[in-house]
Image 1: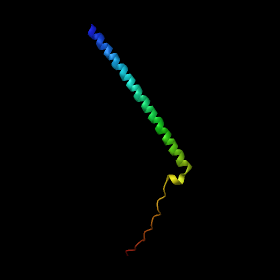
Image 2: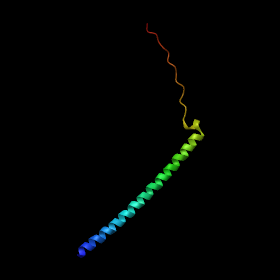
Image 3: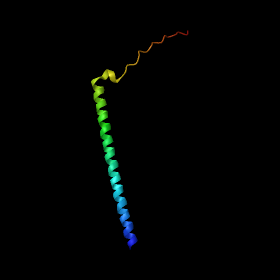
Image 4: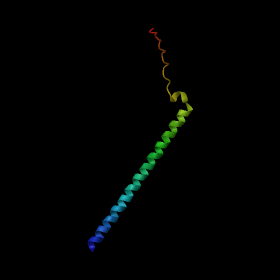
Amino acid sequence: MTARKIDKGRGEQTSAAARQLLETERLARQAKTARLREQRLAATAAAKSTPDAAKPKSPPRKKRKTVDIS
């Protein structure tokens, strides 16, 4: 009977450690998500304030000469 109590105690300790680890990982993910959201919103706000700076213009295309093969 003492073996089962020891195993049960270890299982509870393991479960508590696992829950704590999962909680720590969840908080880290939430912090990262919030940080990335703030960066995205800041980039979007900057892009809206200066639309010309957001998209660089490509150089104008050269027109090709048409050749008549008749």
